[in-house]
Image (cartoon, rainbow, N blue to C red; front, side, top):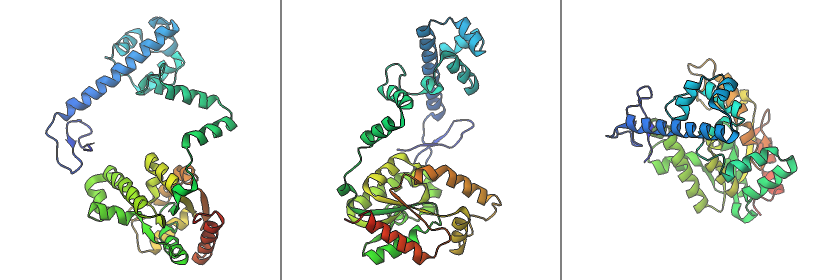
Length: 315
């Protein structure tokens, strides 16, 4: 069962996935979680200080945090601010995430690998990534092609036209999500929120993979922000990023009769640019790109189908 906090200020109510209040002491659950975190941070700070042979008084001078406050912190009773914890971490020569993360910084292979990776040269990093990503062979992607990009990039239009031209079924993942959820995507978002939608999105992707070996899929722009789902998408589909300028994204959505992006939001264009910048590196992980900016649909379609043939996506 998935939960979300409804009363953030008081941390007193927890709501279930279907919106019903859970009859439990939600505040106590959250308080215990916070207490566990504070205890972990205190233990990490004390352990790091002792390993370096630094008296608490010296750490106080190095970090600017009072000895009394450090004593409370190390005992798990001090609710330290992020700013002060950063000072303590720097004084100890550790990253702040070492003090708060679930992995033990002195015993975790994951954290040790991360440190080694940071220190490695570019060629070593590339080699490690290839090994860790366990790049699938061509057969795992079969003839499945997925179009990614922001809303208004042309995923639905080009996907449908390319499917018709290549004799492939065209599927919009949001339609699959609606079918699984038994209601429109907007209603799913309103009732279950982002978390509920993302869970159904993951389920819908699994269903599409299980039922189609050859197809063209269009997905919502935000799927790239969900690491597990996006990684699965990259492994099981030949992905193409459809690019466009922010203005064209906005103009195309409005041309479809959807005024929501601008309704009551004079800063909508700025927000769109911010989203695009934030996701560019994620979209760039796609196997290929087609820039649709300032181009006729027919020209973009020709480039897309030529790219599919050239890259052997249907071989």
